[in-house]
Image 1 (cartoon, rainbow, N blue to C red):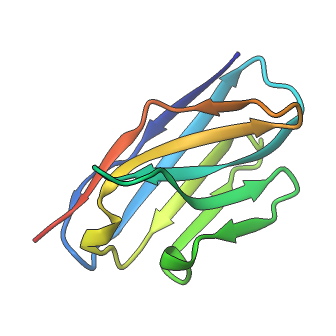
Image 2: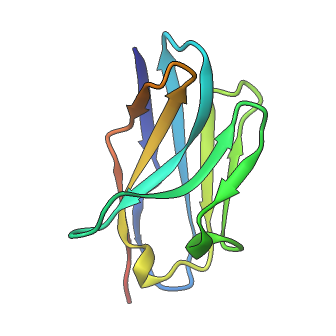
Length: 116
């Protein structure tokens, strides 16, 4: 019932920055967490960052110190500020929304390519 619309992906050189945004709309109940996963070709989908409805963030070890997840005041949009990007960050990034009932909703994915 939730629709997640992502933006901000693209091509960037190593050391550059991108800011991903994900806006949730539609009927949303009992939201537990929102955040970002990523998946590179031949790799499993992995957690990047998550933020709870209370605003508590967590980060995967490879992005700690470089990425920052945040929410807007309405708590219906999440952002991922990605700094000092590395080639190994190249992946499709998926926004997700998880409910207390155990359902996950996914965005369409946005490509992030880090290459010189």
